Each structure stands twice: as C-alpha cells, then as structure tokens.
Length: 268
Image (cartoon, rainbow, N blue to C red):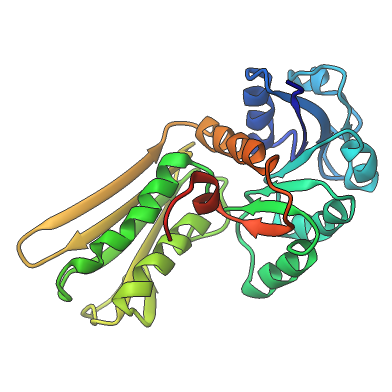
C-alpha cells in the first residue's frame, strides 16, 4: 500500500512539528512538503536542520506553495486565519485535499474560506481534532432531556501562547448547547453585581503554562451537578486526529467541507 503523502503548513510551529513527528512514527504516512511563514527564521532550511524527519524536505514559504504541494495528497494546516485565507484557495485550486485546524476566524472569514474550498476539493475543517473531544461534543445533545432549570456553563484553559478566546472548541460546545437550551446571550466571564438570567450561557476562559487543552461543561441543577471534562495530555492527540482525518479523506471524492462528525461517523 502506498503511503499517504502529506504537506504540513506551519511546519516549524508547535502543532505542525508535532504532526510531522507523529506522521514519522506511522508507516502509512510520508511527509513530502513543509511550509512556514515568510518571516520565519526556518524558511529555506530543511526539516533535518530543525530536528525533524524526513531530513531532506525543505521548509518553503507560501510563495513556493505549488512546489511544496507538488507530490502531496493532503495539505494539513494549523496556522493563522490570515495565512489560511491567503493559502487555502490556492491549495484548493491545485486540487489537493485539505485538513485544517486553525481557529480564530470571524464569521465573514469563515464564509470566504468555505466559498473558496467547498466546491473544489474534499476537506475537513475542525476547531479540534481530538477524537475523544469530538465524541464528547456529540454527546451533549443527550442532555437536552434535563429539566429546563438545569444551567449549563463552559470552562476552557489553554497554554499562554493561545491568542483567541474563547477557544474554537468552546464556541462549538456553546453552539451545541444553545441549539436545544435556547440561550440568546453568552456571558464571557462574570464581574460585578449581577444574577444569571435564564437566557444566559456562561463561557469562561483561562490561559496558563503549557496546557494543551482542557474543556469542561458544568450542568447545574438545584441539588446536583453534572461535570463533563476532556483533558488533552499533549498536542499529539490533535496531530493523530488530523492524520486520521487525512486518511479518511483519501476515500472521499466529492468536493465538500466535512467535519469530525463525518470522519468519526457520529450522528448529528
């Protein structure tokens, strides 16, 4: 069986380098391309020069995206909204499958990106590629059977370097809860003198240390509390999920934007 050939964007970043390391440990994947930002000190170096394998693969800038993608089956990208808006339309035009885990987009940016990709190639977009987290997210709908007076709150914590808050995953959890609770207002943290109203969903964010990701859902009744928690031990869980999605995409021919529910065969 031929290996699935991968080009990784953000190759010298925290997620990109983790994807490359994880792919190197799995025989069915082969890294054939690497991309980084124009201003990166690693642009023009090889993966070997920054301690990654295959050692001979050159780290190119987006100006050489076509060269980086030449032999690739799938483009995996965890970068920035700005970079995705510039690069993903080019990747789609080159007819390469896409796995994208970047967060922090505005609603308008999401629409622009979806329009550029959805009719051209099969792609998986997800704010979180953890398999366990996506199963947890899918299970939220089962709590719609609780009485109306049960209140939902979300807490998320990530490393110091994560700049968007709340996380894309927390937003996804909030959407799932609001779909059956009917919350019309989201409160990001709480300060001062105010009671919680019936139409409010609380979302709390914290940043500290090197935490890869913690997401908690608190469901509070008058006399009991349900607490649902997912903890990522390392970025490897996201990298493995992205590679799992890349493998799944190889069997998809229809140009469409999928999510992890599709990849995992979860009911909506």
